[in-house]
Length: 318
Image (spheres, one colour):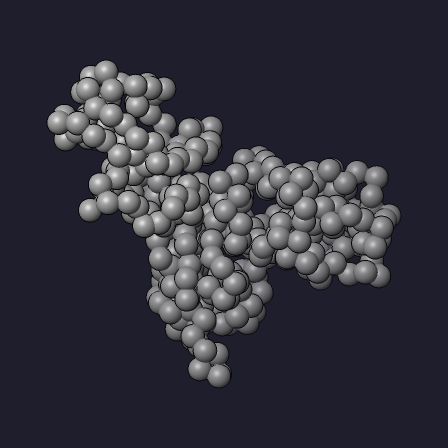
């Protein structure tokens, strides 16, 4: 659905914001781009709908290469791309209904049709009864729901989210993420979101990329990244003290059966297992985690081979 190839963005001051970014987002998935401030993720998002025109490279959305379009063609293409902003970007002089209706007015949609669509959208995002309220009368979470409704007004195929939850408290953040997940499932939306919060990736994302200094360090489905030895995403989700002590083994597991691994090693191979640290999360309903251990005993090599046979990922510290 979204294909970015060789994207480079250099500002007039010589600052390289994007340095050869390649990215593929599949239709119907939620794709998260994770990175700290200055990583280039916001620039990437603005280049996807060409609010920022890249210095070089191509952006293709729904089979249409946006970087090759003229201004009129780009306007038409953008109707299929919704945008959610970090700080809501609502018009303070307009009511909730007026804010949601604004893109429809610009597109020339008749008044009666606009009214019906606004009603549908407010119900969809859980803001029934708030049509006549003004932004100043709303909570942060309600403002973001208005922003989401407005972004969906033109029935887009793609939704771009620019740090949509970073200005919200944890409880409200979770409700907005749940709403985005529901919209993804019910409307078949493809969602590309940027965030610096690992919680967002863990909660809703099917795939992810990690950006640093204008480059994509790694990308893929969350399941693929978790199963990749040395994955940066795995280290971010399941932090353990670094560097690993010499002679230790870091074991990563994802979705394996509930077999008690440690006690099995002790019984089967007569080894001592010293647990140095660990972290466990549930991703998409699947238990995933990292465990750092040190094995002692003459059958340690056989014990490690047993773990590999069970599909666990091992990283041995030298």
